[in-house]
Amino acid sequence: MSSDKNSITNEQEWQMLGQALSNVLQTMSGLEAEIAFVQPADWPLNEIEFSGFMVMTRVRPSVLTISATRPAIMTILSYMTGEMPDELSEQELNDGVCELVNMVAGEVKSRLNDSERAYGLTSPIAAQGSSLRFSLKNGLETFDAFVTVDGLHLKMSLYML
Image (cartoon, rainbow, N blue to C red; front, top):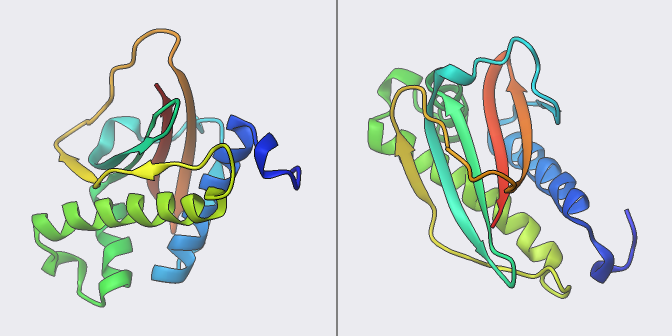
């Protein structure tokens, strides 16, 4: 990656976000993440139940999402909080996915503060339901990462508006 903060590309910023997610998962839960930037054939897209998202405000705003299966978010938050997975309430699961997206976006925000790519952040928002998916306008630039943690699945996406 270039050392000039003003020459950072969308792809490089996306790599930073992927590394930030890996760092956050390792630091907060002790779990190692495997990140693929191409969807694996066996990735359970239709099992997503929780999504946290926030808007990254700048000249060209973007939306960062972290989505997870119920077992994935329960396991990660159990490690983060010390509570047993089945003791976590629905509110705690929603708060937890919001906190994940907040920590990842915040880590990269601090690295880009003095660059042309600096951004502000909105408060994170959670969505919960079965088979959650985002419908996108054609031509919207999107970056996806498919994350496996202990055999469990998360998806991180950046939508350039």
